[in-house]
Length: 514
Image (cartoon, rainbow, N blue to C red; front, side, top):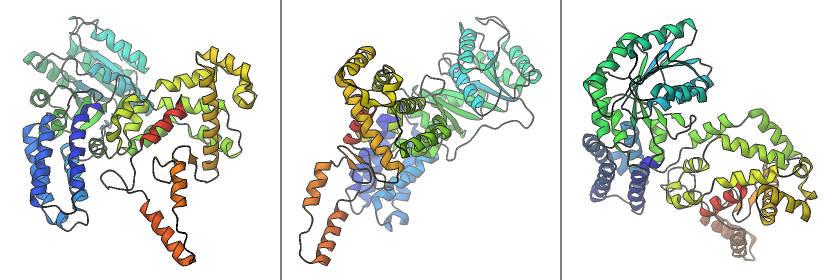
């Protein structure tokens, strides 16, 4: 989520300084609120929203809920999280479907905001849920807009209604009305209307959008807004609300590197919920918007729920059971390893998935250095093997490894490292399948402190009590164990520890070359 990266950095740094204080004074609260205000303004959040937000944080931070808290710093972080959820809309809002199909969804927004691409993304998402969407091409002004929607519809596997060639030819209001009638006849239960945009707000744009809304009576009007356009986002949203009105907001281009804070203001200023967030150019790069999860991402508290949902969508439950059985019976092969990697690729970018883990804001450079092409290189090595070699890596002698290296465009060293990593991974997964605790090389037991090496573990073991009194020795050893226990997340909220550099390095090795 690159768009809110700067805001996230500023807020996490502010809270990091706050955690160092055992007791908060009014001066500490004022200083924290002042830093939050600067961070929000630098991120292009609208001034009225900033004033309301910081006033609420200050009032609650100086109230009884913090004064009586065991850890005031953590309580202030929780307050900021709650208020951030509030300006993002509070609760998740889902699409509202018509009682009698088809459900008509109209898309509105400026030219270049991503309406046409989002139309394909929405169609593909709805198809996965068992719907039969129809895309209607009503952007007849922008050059090749109709052709673009046709290409997007084909990629999404969705039906399209485009009777006019566009490029200034045709009546968009008539196309919209006829499109809804066509969907009714063809029994499509959802109609997605892609309307025209302009480089800026003007009367002609608003009149055309309003006429389409009047002609089709849509159940949802989604305002698609570019998360990178800055302060003008608020003015544009107000103009569309006054001219057309809309029922929900779609944030597009959240994978960009702009400050993007103005997008945080839209829900608060217009009173309309954010329903979807577009996080990339691919047709699968869209997700329902959860205010609480987005707030957690901005505050670097992670988004484990979204990560789990993506894993559930990508992994086949029956295949997972087969893999578990193979692990338990020690029949897990490189062919199975290849299938698992292919399923992981379905989840999308590894960097995005790792970015959803708590505390990853402190490891941005390591994330940037993470080379996702290593998965492709690993796949190339395995595909260069014969079926016999994949099922039994022990037959890989020197000449076979040389042949595999040449066939995959890699080196013999790369092949050797892959086989070694596979054996380590299979051993760890076998331990997990049997209910044990795996010992990851360079990291120690999974349940231990992240990044702790086996060498360090031996050193800690050597430092145990040598008292001749058994009771005293047990008590002293228990004290040592307690002092080395994980201390929780970066803000002390929950017990999830931030992944260490060793974690990322080991994951990199598992997926590709070390």
